[in-house]
Length: 200
Image 1 (cartoon, rainbow, N blue to C red):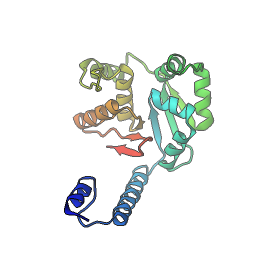
Image 2 (tube, rainbow, N blue to C red):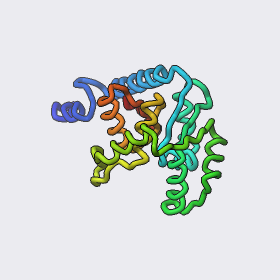
Image 3 (cartoon, rainbow, N blue to C red):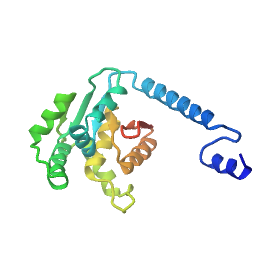
């Protein structure tokens, strides 16, 4: 292989003098190592806290629940859902996906796939006040400059204080979880089932 091509391959993730078969084998080993690492991380019954998009995904894409079960010790992990998340899912399904589910139907669908527990948020509690501070700080912005929502701030606080695993594919929420974990010196564990990746 010409030297110029070898350098290009190296930039694309290949090691110098590495064949294509060796590259693929190295990637397989890295994936196996990461899967073992992920399974070790959930070494006790899994308690998951989900955001609005993940609820939508569970309702509409069965494989999302399968991915969650693959990283839990038991086959039927407990999923906690905030009452506000149920409200948001109801509205989102109507206005963005032209599907109408009542709050009761959303909970029924979830309970048909897993152990689902509804959490009613006391907006006057210390936790809610801490979440409000995170929300009002506007510290975490998405690529369009839109700040983290009040609901997402609540998810951060509830996940951290209960040591629950936050399930989300929202990159802004994932970044906020990392930063808030560092600030409080208490990691917020996050799992994105769409890339099978942990964010500690």
